[in-house]
Image (cartoon, rainbow, N blue to C red; front, side, top):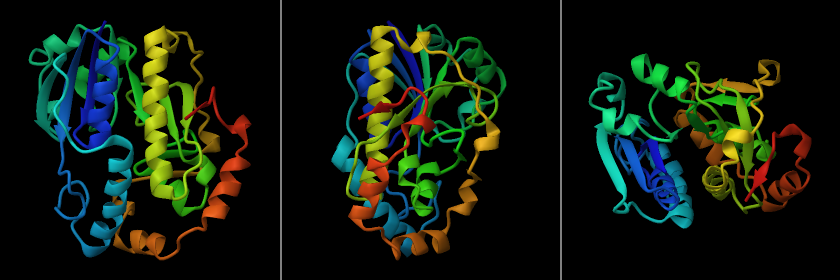
Amino acid sequence: MKITVFTSNQPRHLSLIKDLASIADIVYAVIEVNTVFPGERADFFKKSDVMQTYFSKVIASEKKFFGNIDFLPENVRPLILKSGDLNKVSNTILAPALNSNEYIVFGASYIKGELIDFLVKENAYNIHMGVSPYYRGSSCNFWAAYEKNYDMIGATIHMLSKGLDSGEMLFHALPKFEENPFDLGMRAVKSAHKGLTENLKTGNLSKFRRIPQDKSKELRYTKNIEFNDTVAADYLSNPTKTSEISDIILNRDIENFLNPFIY
């Protein structure tokens, strides 16, 4: 089996590539690069003391679940791009990666043009880190935690579409309990990876019924610009007790989720 994945370069993204490499003969990995020191270096997120404090916690949790950045397995063929350059690259250049059995998108920039047309036609899957249709857009699990909706921290595996995070849903991946929201968010990523790879390996992913997203259930749609120093500082200064997080997770209404995979 050949798999193509469009993703980024943080440890969690590299970990997905490794997981896919464990079940595939070859993985074509189109990797868009951002700094691996967010908050400390200006890039997708701004550089500031607040952001550095916030992302130091994100990085610590990411390292706990996914380790450090690392080299990729021998059966991975990477193509490295600057984040945002993907839509400038023609399908002719991408051709070796466009002859796979499965296509995955996780953490890539917004895909447009001939590439999105091809991927939609080929029934590509997208991992959205957020529980759709409740939380859509950017930094969804942060906003779920900010609003203390810890039961809504998770991921949605859905069909890739031309609209942002709007494709038909297959299942939700949810985290088991963790003592803090940063670990809860990273466990949600781990749950998404495990649920996706297990269902790919067994062939079950293509058998899920595709469920349209009900936008009337949307709680928040966020843009990256909304996650700023003021919001991050407010979040850091108002931590939630572990017992409160535990109560919310233990009382999670499973009926709100589609074919939930909990890890």
